Amino acid sequence: MSGLEGKNVVLGVTGGISAYKAAELCRLLRKAGADVRVVMTRAACEFITPLTLQTLSGHPVAQNLFDLGEEATIGHIRLADEADVVVVAPATADFIARFAAGMADDLLAAVVLATKAPVLLAPAMNVNMWEHPLTRANLARLVGTGVTTVGPDAGELACGWIGAGRLVDPAEIAVAVEALVGPRPLDGRRVVVTAGPTWEAVDDVRFLGNRSSGKMGFALAAAAARRGAEVTLVAGPVSLPTPPGVARRMDVESALEMQRALAELDAEADVVVMAAAVADFRPATRAAGKLSRRQDAPSSVTLVQNPDLLAELGRMRRGTRPLLVGFAAESGLAADALVARARQKLVEKGCDVMIANDLAAAGSDDNAVTLVFRDGRARALPRAPKAAVAEAIWTELLRAS
Ligand code: CTP
Image (cartoon, rainbow, N blue to C red; front, side, top):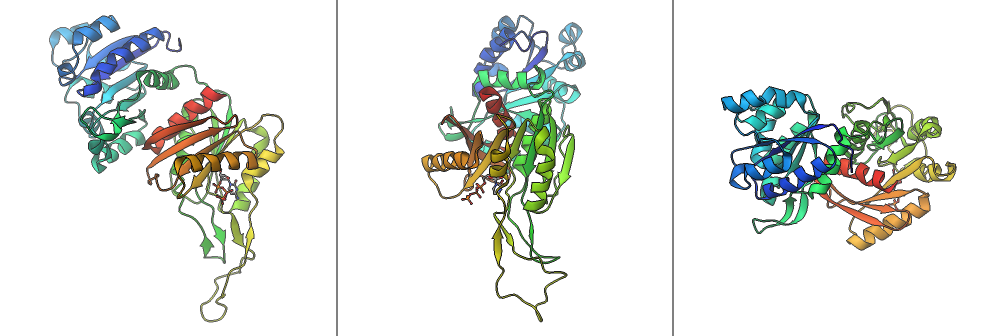
């Protein structure tokens, strides 16, 4: 990897047991060509010595906001200004909370607040701290301001618990840094993402719908835009703001409207990601006005099948364009059955990648997915906030293509 040639990376290290892994990350970043400036919090120095990181980075480690000597060498504003990217690994719950609150009470907090460069956090902490609603809210707030996250992984934690909270592999963090400031792998590519539910009208006020929030699709659109893609987001009825960098948004209501939008876009697209929860059925007729309880209350609603939009795209495409990515939402299946079902849908619909998710494992802001590829390979991604899952999905798609 040499994608960080000439880039200035500020590596922030906060006080968690996995701080020792920052040494490996520092080495990998330098190997990729980056000039690395390390900033450590006071707590981080309890876990790993500044001498280690000074030796590996080749620069003195910055630790103190009020040290005149340090400020004279390279002040905190200069560190923030000169950075092409700031990565904090590990990022503890305490650091995430201080950052989300906009505090600047130590050098690293001041740097992340002052910088205009992208900020990447690699959270690591005890599973209960990770799952605490305050940590989730803090992270969601930061993601909303454009901060990117990678991980954490699930597994055995140093504190003895088993669950999510482990720092992701330093190699994965280095890849995520490169995705932010390295070459933009989707530059010039046209990506279409569908998101959200569809509403199928019963009459002019009533509809059949589903509970899809649209968050996963919106996060995928945002992550593609960050990688340089020209993104068109075809959104079902949701009230989410258009993510920064998304070139075009088409709001649709029903499956048939989504079909028309896709027909307009398909010829130009390099990648189509069908994250929308398209309704499989619609009422056969749409009653004009509002059906009245008194006069015309129907005893049943006749349904007809909607077209399978993904399967249509699969049938229509020429050669390998566009790359087609589907989502298979399943409930009540064991892990192998989930993958087998996704594989079956992949073949039936003629797409390249099917992303399986277990509805039970998903929350409104989290998701846990498995990518199933055409060659039969499957890659499970651990449960994480949807923004982090979206990042990981693009990393996997790009690695595979
Ligand atoms: N899909 C579509 N058009 C439909 C239904 C689904 O394009 N009418 C797409 C979804 O956007 C998703 C993929 O097909 O990318 C799989 O959707 P899913 O609901 O899991 O599959 P279904 O084909 O509806 O199968 P089943 O109802 O048996 O789960």
